Length: 525
Image (cartoon, rainbow, N blue to C red):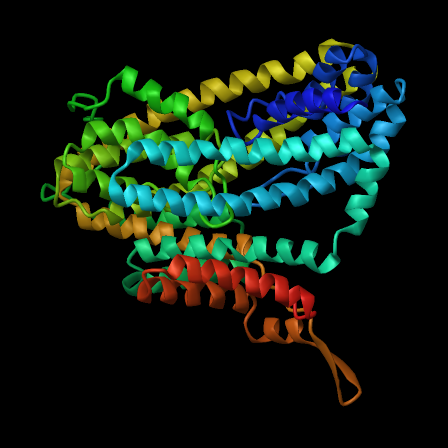
């Protein structure tokens, strides 16, 4: 393929794949759809359908749940389709190359997530200055980062051929590849430590411990622990009676009569911005800057005082990780809480941080299990099966339900999240139970954070030695003392560093890279 043709096709493929992180999670770059689109563009729809359907089925169970970055199905499907068509319509070539291409893409996407850490810290600086324009531009720079990564991978693959891809994957130094993978599982400890710092962990440390025990010893997932935390919080509320003895949720006032600062037009601004929630996704704070970017139009309306506005921006730039659809419910509730904070200066900012942390767990579980692993997979299986039979309706059967789900779930989660948040604020003020709500939200938030530490932060020790003629595995020894000891220890160490140093973020990030890369290089991890 000529250089000019490779440049043009690579730019198109990169723009198509960019939707996966950059502009809305529309599913148009999934193999079953992207393969057909590329087939149409290159004049061989049938090969596009066959390769796209086959690669979709290959990657059916390979989903980026939580913070994982598995081999990338989108790049694998699109480049595999291009190879198959360029080889004269041979689907088997694209199918065989899908996995090595996907693995290479995994490595490059991990690189992009790390580059975006720099963007997050640039945004921190602009937030401290109250420079909204630069905060927004910094977040949207993530589009350029991902585009460049996708473009480079695609261009070199198309320009130099399939053999180049296979050789490049095989030539990557094992210590560097595995070292960066190890670093990617340590870096979330920085975000978790920041989240713990925002809550009253010193007072409620017992619930952090409880969340850890439930996740590590009882092997409960984040959703189950979130529900247990919510049950505890509900117990706190139910025991809190008003002076007349009525439960705070017993009356019929649902807060709808309360005057709100946001109208439908304002909510739509937040809604449209939410499609860019993952544009600057990173290993330290995940979708934090995307959350802040979506909130900006509302925060401008809430806070006219510059210092209060800066504080609100910083508060909404904390660690955040949730499914891009259900995460909008968190945005909606946060809008209501920020609105109340702008009205009531006595309201503790910890309420907002704790509530976000408390909602992340259950809503992530719903999004990943119901929307991603179930809804998408069902239509992917149907669409891929039709594509393998050469039916051009296969991609349509897949894409239409997913686009509708994307639009309607995002909008209604924001709309009703905001409405629920208004009701919640109304009840809290009515019952004079701010302290109780902070307590309940912190309980759930810390339990969820502990569960996320167990799920996201990984630090397995690979060291082994012989003692008295028996092989001793250090990791097994540590597990006997306390399972999950090192991830928890690293998170708490980072928490201490963040409390003691103004440049704690940078220290923790550097430590993560040192531990990951050198740990793998010297065989410690």
